[in-house]
Image (tube, rainbow, N blue to C red; front, top):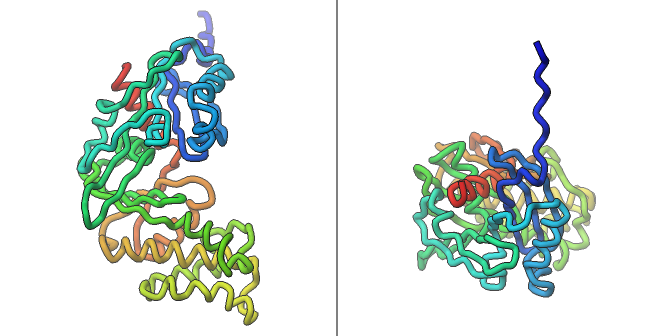
Length: 312
């Protein structure tokens, strides 16, 4: 009896398509086989802002060539490449939106590379709560493979909170938490009180600040100066500044969501990197039950699901 030889790992020539998450300042590409297995991966800082100067097609072509991708391989893109300032605008779909229909509205790009398409973003056309997202909708498609109904938190520069019902985006809200942290810590008086430390969710200054924001949401922004004052008066060190500021901003964000939805339903946290532990800690302190999923995995899953519907 002859022993079976292990299957050879897939190579670039086995690729079913390329899937791309193209952000404002980042680029991520995966070559995937028909079963969803990742064959190759590329990452860079060649986001929309970079490509507005250099062009989008040369960047995509260079990364495909670096992975020895087959010629004319289909490419599906999500994110800021579909913005007005991007490669080609992929108009927003109005909520409520069924996530499974995203690929039906993918926009084709005229390209020498072959069949290149860009997924649309989502728009909440509500005069009292206007909002948009681009890229996160594809992560949500990946999330919907796990859960169809519930509250989703997607932290980042612009955190998104999304209500899903049976695979539809019923509504969402954007919090500029990450951007506020960057602006305040670099361009305000608090720049003297915040260093480049990356706090974890158990840092005492972070925990105290989260509890303060949750206990008195109306005062969260009134307490920002306390980040500097606590150091001037000897209660904290500069190494505590990032934790203190993060706690106030994240606590205020979660407090607003708690006020709107209560804590009766759990939260699916779609995150990666250092933000994961911060949001896990703050959400638990606010009384939410949480399930954490990796943000990279979700966007990759969502892109692959949409690609299968287009070309499978």
